[in-house]
Figure 1 (cartoon, rainbow, N blue to C red):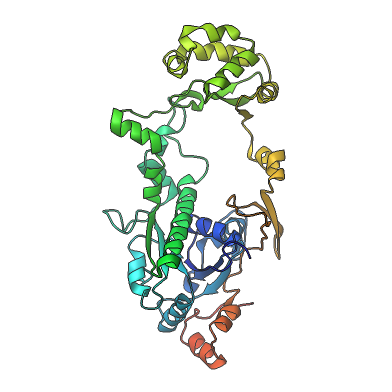
Figure 2: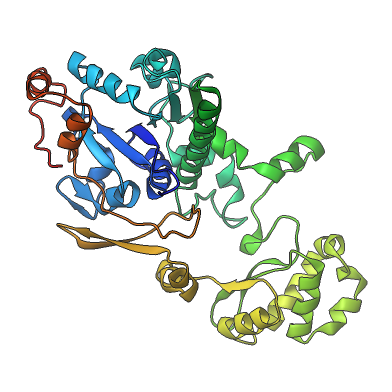
Length: 404
């Protein structure tokens, strides 16, 4: 069996952060059933341009492989009944909604424990389920600003800068998945579930890590650094070579020794200004010009090859294309392909979360309501019961055609 093959998760999720968190669980074998609100067309991620076809997009495919889909209207009595029947047989309810919504629509532990005392309810929200911003929507871009990330990113003389990736969304998804797994472990041990109150805001603040510790305890004021330099380790930054940029990082003294030896500048080892981390940091304005003058004498590829051979942490600054075709990317099996009726084949990066030697398998993201027949069969509904629910609008009005 796959590591999580015995886990059933009901996911009221959409767009990026929530589906990103659960896709790692799905890749590990968890049965993730997406509950999609019918009147709005389901997961908004289905409609993200520019690579979109009808109710599908490459954005949606990225975050929803290996999942199932059911259109269900929780505002209708029949829809709520189906949801509660699903909860009785599930291990977790997972959502990414505004912080005040889980309680309003009854998907918290207090609202569901009478159905399943061991249910784990993981709510990934913008700002959490408590606090002055609990009822506000949270988006990655806003949170990168609120949490101070943008004040740390970019050139010192440039504007505050967002990361090129939605890192608050993605790290928030990871935190939600980790919280959910912790809750499942506790529920299995104790027979009692509970709530995971996870937020993008908490995640973003938590990611401030050691700069926050420095600030809180020593008054350190974080600032943007030239050439993406590390705030305390010198040299550890981007350097310009003859033709391009590359990265060199001396996170240990032994790397500094290897670096200057490879550069043909052994005299720097005897220079008191550069004798250790502290000295190099205090005299960075004198050291960095010496290194910059040397690096521009050869190409980036030449320096990277020689420094790698010498055991110095280094690497090129790749384009996305170069990163995706790197020999290590291929060797680690980080690209998977699924068959798709419109796109033909969809290639995408896979989850880095792994356990065991069994290779992962992948299937395309589900069409909206694709697993309607599978779900009603598993719940043991008779034809008459299904017809009653359909007529009551439980699955939307009109119900999208489902295929198992």
